[in-house]
Length: 141
Image (cartoon, rainbow, N blue to C red; front, side, top):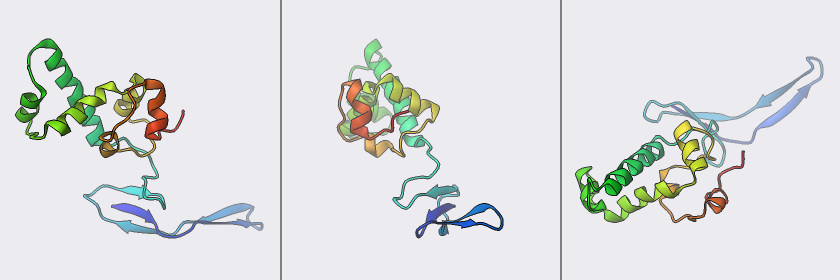
């Protein structure tokens, strides 16, 4: 189940009780049995790394090792063995290994990436590590 913010949040200071009352209009949405709160812009309120992104990064490193050691000769063959028929998609997955070590650690550790999902990493991104966070919109720590 997901919780979606449906309107504008309000804050009211209650002098008699010396507290602040926060009202956030939400709507419960059932999605694949997972509970999730989304912000008005549609991003998850509690940041989690996309499991597909984490799995793709692990797969990319496995593929890279197989190619570097000569266990496999071509990415197309390797991907086909895993049920991926698009060489283009497979090369985009493999490109995840060019992410900075800091970003890769964040993906594996489940740290905040600003709500990015695998699809966000399938688009071109800079190879220079110093430019990747800014280009991908990853918040600075």
